[in-house]
Length: 89
View 1: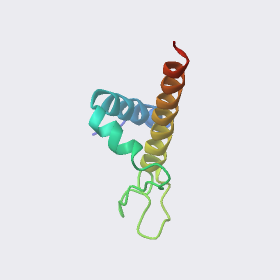
View 2: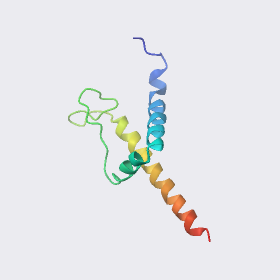
View 3: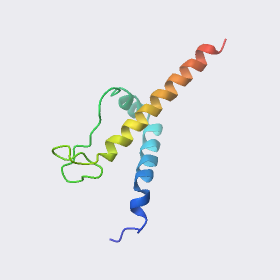
View 4: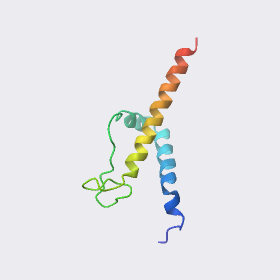
């Protein structure tokens, strides 16, 4: 199978969009993700050193990074909506 030549330039954005869609569609999954606040998330794949962290932490862990970014966004959105609700009288 051939991969698009520009795939390396867009794969992180594509994965982020897919994760955002997944976690936005299923609130129980976004709740589970938010419940990991304060934890470092690592895709523990020993074979994929781009998306995973590797056996000894030698991987780039982009999947974990994207999940933590999304988690922060969900927490921020939740905080913003809580503040808006408390201001409405």
